[in-house]
Image: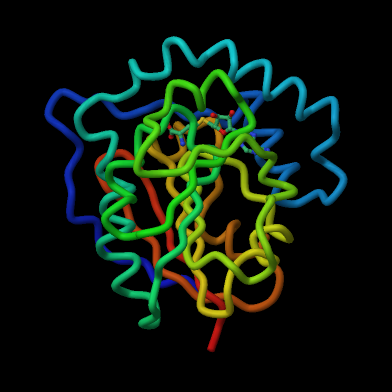
Length: 217
Ligand SMILES: C[S@@+](CC[C@H](N)C(=O)[O-])C[C@H]1O[C@@H](n2cnc3c(N)ncnc32)[C@H](O)[C@@H]1O
């Protein structure tokens, strides 16, 4: 069950509400990754990698005040709402050029930025996260070895998330611009996509949305 928490962070002054991105091509890929086990094909992977390689040079233009609010709020209030656990190892999935690394690092002493796009990763800071070029549908990590899987505007591959997360592990799902984010799922859809019963909390920050999910105890 997902419990909605009231939003506590207003949109930044002058930040106009985003339009819906429901017909964006990345929305189709997002839904295929989450709900169709055969949806992530080599052709789709290659197309996505090329797209983000081509966007890497201008990605830092998205680093505007307030964009960090949903991920910071998810880590503060979302992790606090999850059952207590010792959380050390985190993966920032689809980390891009590492815009969020500085917010994740204080929560996660062992942290890796995972991305398919080499052009994105080479623009990410060399520290404190280890940069790893990998496909999040086949992560190069052992079963049950990750405490926190952060997906900020990134594709969810539910079976792989379930494989790599420790029994007390959590999924942190963030859409910086809510339903205006091309790679977007509702908290209830993340809950539905993850294998087995999960619980979680969801909220908003600015125009962004976030949810944190853990296996039902
Ligand atoms: C919308 S960007 C988000 C980047 C960053 N998290 C942010 O919010 O600024 C999505 C990122 O996911 C990466 N990506 C797409 N498919 C992936 C996959 N299968 N495995 C790992 N990364 C992937 C892209 O290369 C891109 O950098």
